[in-house]
Amino acid sequence: MKFPVEKILNLPEMKVLDCLRVASRREEVEGAGIIITIEKADNDCTCPNCGQTTYSIHQNHWRMIHDLPWGEKSVLLKINRRQFKCHKCKKVFSENLDFVEKSKGYTKRLATNIVEQVLNSNIQSVAKRNDLSDEEVESMLKRQVSQILNINLSQVKRLGIDEIALVKGQGNYLAC
Image (cartoon, rainbow, N blue to C red; front, side):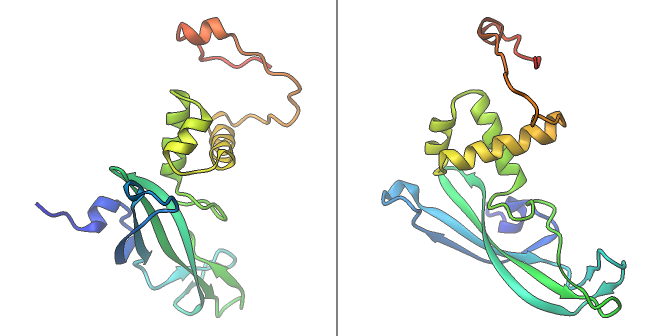
């Protein structure tokens, strides 16, 4: 039974333009991946400044975004993030993509998955397993933690971890 790429991708507001299997950044054959070219299905966008709906595309910006892997294959989304020009207020703005944060090279669902993996492992092994750098994994962790906890950690000087409570499964507290 075949499934359309749109259903597997599970991004209902997006339409798939192309799907291509390629070799990964690594030189090994087992790291082959998939590039899926997508863009928003709607041809219009609402101006964030004045609320006017516009169909006038100013520019197309193509970006490569990491997404959840499909089995052993890494997935890159080639996204057309269009810029629109509002005729009412004359401002140029980019369309909003709910599944990826602005100026990030990965989807929100990939970041959530990486954080779950790190909770059961360590940063280095998760980075290697997902063909990412340690810095990318740390960045995902910091972003996810700031969203989940909603605590300003900029003034923290020391953080203590009770390793015995962590081993016994009682690591559900934060001490500052």
